[in-house]
Image (tube, rainbow, N blue to C red; front, side, top):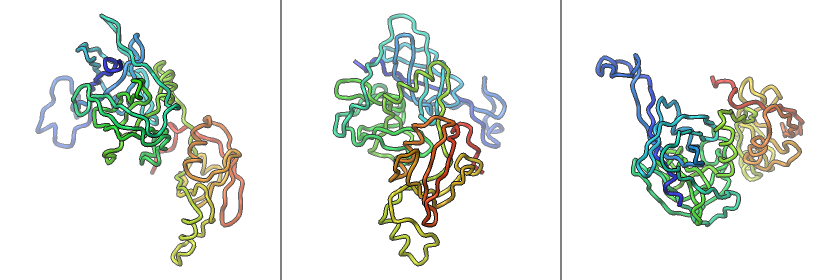
Length: 326
């Protein structure tokens, strides 16, 4: 059974106080000047008997203290071994004592099909061991489609309720195997839940649990899928100030300064039609290819610019070192 391996994660973090708060509410013990303690809560799942726990990065972000509570009432101090904000994953270690820790059986997210049963377990709004039932609504939802383009994950979509406090808990298949890690990072996603595929999460945990960092390739552009129909509507508009090629592709809407794309010569309204030798018909196609490349890997790109095809060469950068937006 998976239930005993699902844990509650309580966190404490120090946050800056708003102006004048220190005058109204004097410092309590353990709080620094100009700071106050803030508590948070989420869920996690035990992966191994030696105390490795998987959860969301946003659950433990900036945490000064992490406490892990098992369903049998045992509590442990947790050590955050590694986090990746772009995948929203974190690895926590506890030192097991007493009886062996319960662990969760892992399934395969690449075997899921739309319509399969889905079960979400977690500590929804502080209510321990809450179970909700639904189905797999969609597979491989890109972060851009979900509305969180700063993430580097293709999500599983489910209608099983994932509420605050459920974050980091497991999404199970009908056999009780973990196939995803629930995440509740889109505030307006009522009735729609998203989970990180376990195949992706398990691979990342090997790096994070060892204290390592995961590199993510990026170009530094904002894109939108273009269709012939949308291009024709634009071109027929007498107030439109740009002509768009009437074909499928990934339309560049913005190029970040000092990014690999800027250095390679990308321009706003370029239409990406081929990337690394692969035809591109949507922004999701382009994003998926970039996500699959290594940092520092050169990519050959074909774009349409002012009705002419242009070849560009871009070297992917490391997302964690991208320039700050001005």
